[in-house]
Length: 317
Image 1: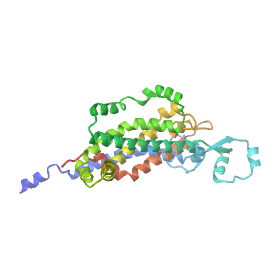
Image 2: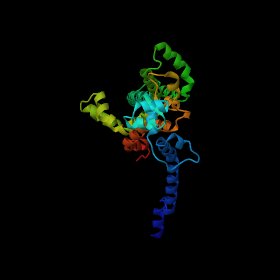
Image 3: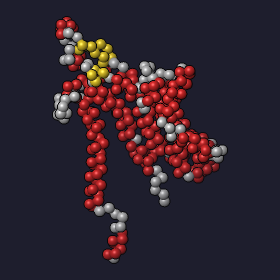
Image 4: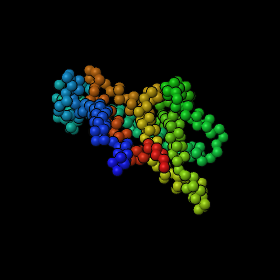
C-alpha cells in the first residue's frame, strides 16, 4: 500500500517546488511589468521630474505630459501672457505655468486614429483571408499544396525592411504612398502568411464528420463552414487576430518609409515629439501609454480565447 501511494505521487509537484516556481514567475512578472509601470508613471510627471537624478519615485502627479501631447504651444513673454487675461480651461492653466500659450491641437490624435484604422482593418482582412485559405488547404485537394504552403511561409523568413525599397517604388507608381489603403494592403499581405499557417492547424483538428453530417442535412459547403466549422475555430481566430494586430500595431519601418502625413501612424510619430529645450519625456510617455491601451484591452477581452487557442491540440486523447 505504501509503495502504491508513493507510485501515485510520482510526477506530482512538491510544496517546495511550487513555492520556487511561484517566486520565479512573480520575479519575472515584476521585471517584465516594471518598464511599463515606469512609462505610465513618467507620463504623469513634470518635465523637470522626468529627467531628475536620482529618478523620483514619489512625485506630484500632473497632466502636463498629456496636455503637451495633444496641443501645440509657443513660449511668450510675461507681458504678452498678462494681456491674455486668466486662462479659460484647465489645460491652458497648466501651459501658462511654463510661460507658454496653446496655439492649436497637435497631430497625435490623427496619427492615433490612423493606427486604429490601419491596424484593425488589416487584421480583419488578414484573418478573413487566412481563415478561408486555411480551410481550403485543409479540406480540399490543392495541387502542389505543400509547395504552396512553404512558399506562403517563406514570405515570413525575410525581414520586411529587405523589400522596403521595391515596395516604396511600386507604391509610388501606383499612388498608394502615404495612404491608409496602401498600408492596409501591405500589412494584410504580410500577416496573411501567419494567419494561414496558424489557422490551418486549427482546421485540421476539427473532425470532418461534423461537416459531413451538415452536408447530409442539406447544408451547402459554405453554410457548413459558417455554422459548423467557424464556431469551433473561435479560439484560433482570436489568437491569430491578436498576433496579427500586434504586428500591424507596432510596425515601424514601413510606416516610417511609406507615410509622412496623411497615413502616418503613431509609432513613427511618438519619437518625434519635441518639447522646449529637448525631448519632452512626459509627452512621449503619455503617447506610449495611450498607444498601449488598445492592445491591452483587446488582449484582456480575448484572454480566455487566446489561452484556449494557444493550447489547442496540445493534449490528445
